[in-house]
Amino acid sequence: MDMQVKGVLGTISFDGEWITITKTPVGPKPAPVRIRAADVTGTRFKRGTRLMHGYVQFEFPGSRASGEKAGLAFGGRPPYEDPYSLSIPRKSNDGAEKLVAAVEQARD
View 1 (tube, rainbow, N blue to C red):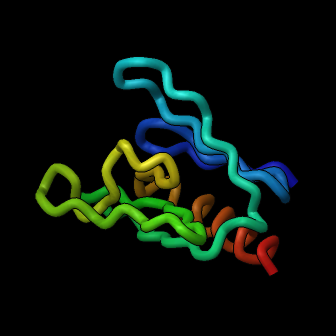
View 2 (tube, rainbow, N blue to C red; view 1 turned 180 degrees about the vertical axis):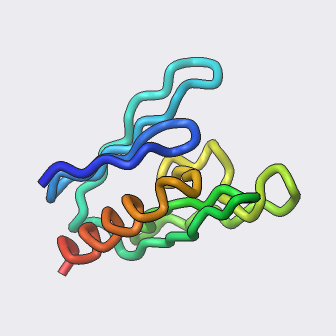
């Protein structure tokens, strides 16, 4: 059950147990972040619109989720530096929604 969602500057994939967030580098090449679905305590999903990108974000015990940045350029999304989130374009809404649902199901 491999799922993959193309984000604005990277991808999120989920194989049923592990979530992998791979961001397109802006500067030094960041390593992909791998997260066990069982370790996730919450998910946040905001649909993208014609004017604004949405995002997918994963939360963990002991880590504070990055808040949404204000302003037209960021449109209420977590900052790029947040390793546990990824901005998504409107065309990826359905895939992102399915991926978040699959992660939520795997957590139970």
